[in-house]
Image (cartoon, rainbow, N blue to C red):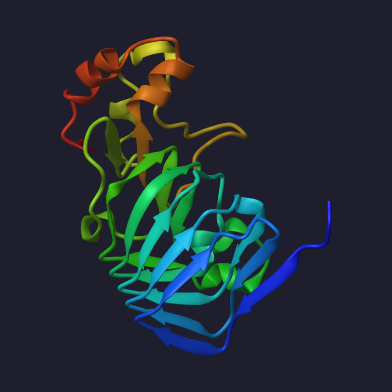
Length: 210
């Protein structure tokens, strides 16, 4: 494999532009001191090719053309009034300073953002108010205040032995978890059950948006 070309955006403000982050041979940095306003950011690279730290995004649209998997660095971005389109799995957004020792994890925030055109699976909102956010509809569903409602959520039998929230042990969800969105078809496949079986449980809770 050849060298990756570093493409660095930092210490500048960009407005009303379309940024295409799609070159497989590049490593993209959206970094310190960068502010994007009213921009469209097209992402078609794996998580390993994208570095976001201490960047601010205001009224931007993120168009994800290739599923973005297990990407935690959104929590070192300030996201306000942004729209997300495409497929995200295992991604975290919001404020989670305990995530790592690096100072840029203090920087993260999310408010007034719209995920209604995205497909989220196993994606979490950390340390931010989910009431300002729009979540995707069924077959996605979103658990609100899952830590606070953990006893209630875990009190019923979920299909395929699924546990929606884990509050103890090494795999527990962090205390700052404010919302979790899951994608029923993928979840049903992993658990060898059906979307309908999940919907029957989801419909029982007023703390689940679907």
